[in-house]
Length: 251
Ligand code: ADP
Ligand code: MG
Image (cartoon, rainbow, N blue to C red; front, side):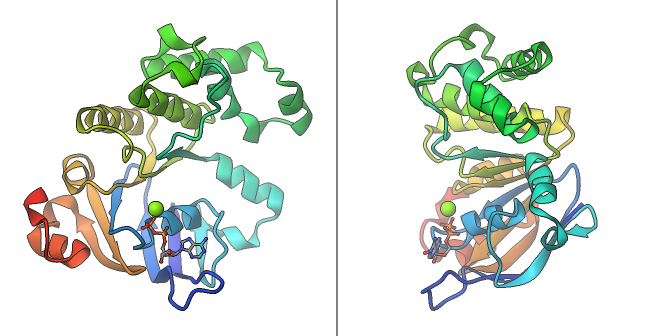
């Protein structure tokens, strides 16, 4: 479904590669967590997948076709098939839950309709449906700035789902939440993954969450994949290789 072929990324002015010769294949239904220390290349990998990262080498193919061969319009269509959730939610604080979720549909609409903020009855119903799915029906009209961190991330998930994606990507979506809330949010992500039949790829710094929820773990160190396998096979040895020798009591 989604393939990364020999991808390298080197940022301008940097003397080392953020990603080096990365080869990965993902299928619909995979629930994958990406682990690695800060600076390992996790965010760069996520941006590579949704086509926003300029590549120094290699190619991303989506359903058999290279992204690089697509026009800007076609690339936009691919991107709207990929919903994204973020560490800091990236919501508009002064707007309501409903208004924030509706912005998730912008990729499907004309610039003019987006500018005037006009939505059809079907679009509003679709937004209501996903708001209900994430458990926020009673908060639809509340301004996002008045919500808790966990509720904000539920809005982030609803905004990603409203565009009816095939892929759900997360760049450390629980890094700003307390452990209990992180667990609830991961549970919700897994539920949405199953109900919407998605490919889900989530960066996470918490190994125990990855082992609990993911079927597959990918570990990066200095831009290189050092582990790609079943999460049950990610043990102390792999932990130490990923993070160094300290702190393996996490497992
Ligand atoms: P992670 O998300 O795992 O912390 P990143 O993908 O953000 O890692 O970064 C990987 C490497 O690329 C790091 O060495 C980081 O400093 C570097 N890097 C990331 N973004 C940029 C950028 N915009 N310009 C230059 N270097 C960058
Ligand atoms: Mg990052």
